[in-house]
Every structure is written in structure tokens, then in C-alpha cells.
Length: 254
Length: 311
Ligand SMILES: Nc1ncnc2c1ncn2[C@@H]1O[C@H](COP(=O)(O)OP(=O)(O)O)[C@@H](O)[C@H]1O
Ligand SMILES: [Mg+2]
Image 1 (cartoon, rainbow over the protein chains, first blue to last red):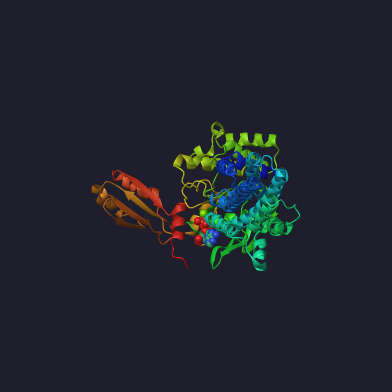
Image 2 (tube, each protein chain N blue to C red; image 1 turned 90 degrees about the vertical axis):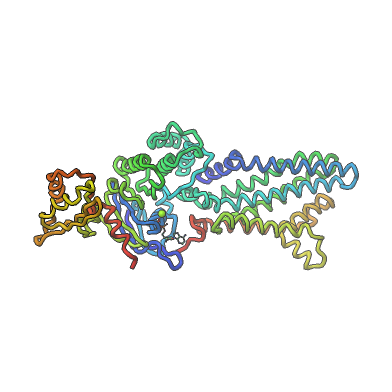
């Protein structure tokens, strides 16, 4: 029962305490700008409608991943720094429940980001035949990424001596994962392999093949392997290790 | 509660070294020591926030191998605890009561009762951001009591409070031991206010126990010769010294306006009576500005012990 109390509190803190709504507001301004640019480009016929939908989805996924990771990276080390962790750890709540509450709250930010993006996608994709499948694909891909990155961010936060270290390590990681998406598509077997290994780049590639190229959702499914692996390894690792690694002092041992 | 050979090492440094003691219900144990003595570390070990390097302890009858069961039975006010600034005092307490498994109704009842107990009822719905230091400290104490604990730990509860705030907090702590019958462990580096509250004390320096026992016992272990400081108007100092010159067992030392009197025991082990000293001065019609006895208070024993060079 205590997991429910912790989770409810984490969600409320995020969504009623201020951070969530502010981040969503910022995202909606960003999406408005992109939609405006995409729409005017469509009139000029530079940007195909499906590409505009893809761009908006990718921005939502990227922003969702970013805020989810940053909030996760702040979760434990931030409480440690604000001296509120001790009273939480003193309560007879399992460390798993604490971590789970924080993970789901962080992932809810991505879900919020997606919800904000829906009307924009609707506006941009009017008349596109496979708009709904495209949106569902975006939701699945983004959720996979958010869950995996949140687990990674929490692990970093748990092990970091300071909040600054935790947040900067996580941001650096995200930057390293996003950088390849801005590079030209790799050639050669090794390049493609690397591209699939990077969960962010591979997931966004998959999204493009489905939304823009109109391939079936099974066509490039192997591109989701790495993000699925991060989520499937990260979350259980976090849950299994939580009782042993979540401490008041980072890395406390005998 | 009982601890045996409790030890915590950080790399090469030993923060708490083979500390043993026990506290019973209704008692208040003062954990005293200068900064860095290991008080916070000792409390964090006992409250399961840190894993001991070695040693055993039982809290509220629960062995240290069952940290979850210990946490259910203890209340803790951590050193310099932080609070969620945008929550109100009652939201904060309600949340923690719920974390301890109380249902909504019981948690609300407990919250209301505790807020009244620590004198925060009228500010219950204000954001913690608007609370003074003393109010935060009292809110922290209320939080430590949500589970009606058998053992309560306070780490530097009076740190940074004004004298009125200190008295208020210490009053609440006394009540917790006396009326709730809890065993209380209280750490501090400021002693004077603790003397009246603690039933026993443990003096730590660099992680080791220098002295333990009741306040009187600890003072007794420091066999310093009692000294008195007598302050009189500066033109009277010579007359004051004169009036005491004939009394046996007194060593006198004069400065501009104070007379430092060491009360040396005579050959029969009899220590001169301080009252007699004071009376002799008064009889000589010398106005006494102040008369301080040293070596009879816990703070003197503490200073004498903790100021020695570390071995
Ligand atoms: N996380 C830590 N890592 C290394 N040393 C520590 C850590 N926490 C405390 N110490 C050391 O342990 C000693 C005792 O600290 P502490 O228990 O906080 O003392 P007190 O509460 O009596 O002021 C100090 O020398 C301090 O530097
Ligand atoms: Mg301390």
C-alpha cells in the first residue's frame, strides 16, 4: 500500500507542484513554432505532410526523453542535496516503492509531452491516411525510450555524490545519444550496426521509416531492439538493486 | 535500546569507534561532542541510515539485522533536515503518517493532534517555506512522532535556534520521554541547555567514548580542582584578597578586577566550603559583582575532556 502513497505524492509534486505544467507549457510553445513553420512550408510544398508529422513526433519524443531523464537524474541525488531524503528513507517504505514512484512520475512527463503534441499532430496531419497508426507508433517508441532513460537516470542519481554530477552526467549521455541523429545516415555494415546500437538514434530511425516511408510497423522492427533492451534491462536492474544501492550517503557500504 | 562495539569507517577514517551504551524507556541520553565527534554518524547507524562497519545494536527490542522493523518503531529528527517548501505543515505530516501505514482518517487525526502538541496548529495550512527555523524544527519533531515511536532520536535539535526556541524544543523533548515514555537519544555540541534534560550522557571525541554515565558521574570523572571566579569592583580587589588570606586551602590569583580562587583539598581531603569563601567576602562588606564556580558543571567536564589533544 505504501508504494501507492509514494507514487501518488510523486505525481502530485510533479504535476501540481509546478514543474510538470511549466515544462508542458514550454513544449507547447516550441510545437506551435514548429507547426507554424511546417504549415507554411507545406503551403510552399517544401515539406511533405508526413514529414511534418514525423518532425513534430520526433520533437515530442526528444523533449519527452530529455525532461524524463533530467527529472529522474534529480530524483534521488536532488532529495539528498535538499536534505529531504533522510526522512523519506526513515519511513518504512521499501526502496523499490520509492524508486518505482519516482520512475512512473518521471515517465508521466513523457506521456504529458505526447498529450500536448496530439493536437498539433492532428492539425498537421489532416488528410494523412495513416495518422493514427503513426501516432500510436510515436507513443510506443517514446514510452520505450522514456522508461529506459528514466531507469538509467535513476541509477545515475542513486550513485552520484552530488546532484550536479548526476544531472550533468545524464545530460551528457543524452547529448551523446542524440548527436548521431544529426549526422548523415551511416553507410556500411558497421555504421548501420552502430546506429542500431544507439537506442535513441535507432528508435527515431524506426519512427521515420513508419511515419514518412509508410513501411509496415514490422518492417524495421529490429531498430527497436536497443531501446527495448535498455528498458528491459534498466528497469529490472533498478528494481532488483534498489534495496541494496539506495542509501542516504551515495555508495555507503560496510 | 542497546549498542555494542558500534563502529563506522569511511575509508581510512574511523567516524565512530567501538561505541557501546544503552538507553531505557523514559530516559534521555545526551550524545555530546564537538563537531566531527561522530554524533550524526552514530545516530545514522542506529536509525539504519548507514551500515555499520562492525558492531551490534538493538533498537526497541529489534535486532539491527531487521532495519525495516526498526524503522517502524523509531522516530528521528535528522540533523539540518530539509522540508518540501511548497507543502503545508499538515500536508507534510499527513504524507508521513500515511507512509507509516495509517489510513486517511487516522492520519488526519494524528496530524491534527501532533501539530497542536508542537504548537503549530494555527500555521498548519501555511506553506513550510514561510516557517521560521524553530517552526521547522518543531514540525520535524512532530514528523518523528507520527508512528508513536518507542525510541526517538534528535540530532542537534536546538542548532540555530534562539534561547526561547531552544527552551521550547527541549521542553517538547522532555515531554516525549516523560509523558510518552519513549527512550530518547539527543545529540548536541551545545551543553548548557542539555544538562537539565538528559538523564545520562555519552561524551564522544573523534568517534571514541570519553565518558559515560549520569551527568553527576561524568562531572565526577573529571577530577579537576574546583575553582571559583570572584568579581568585585577593581578598587576592592586587594581588600577581597585580604579577607580570604587567613582561610586554609585557598590559592589566590588576582587580576584587575577578578580573584581566581582554587579550592585545594587540605591534608584530610576536606575541600574548603565555597559558601564560607563567599561569606567571608560579604562579611568584609565588599560588593560582589559575580561569583562563578567552575568544575561543577557538565560544560566544564566536557571542555576539560574534549580540549585535550587527541592521542
Ligand atoms: N560520508 C562521509 N564520508 C567520509 N567521512 C565522513 C562522512 N560523513 C562523516 N564523515 C566524517 O566522520 C566524522 C564524524 O562526523 P559526524 O558524525 O558528522 O560528526 P558530528 O555529528 O559529531 O559533528 C567526521 O570526521 C566527518 O568528517
Ligand atoms: Mg552532526
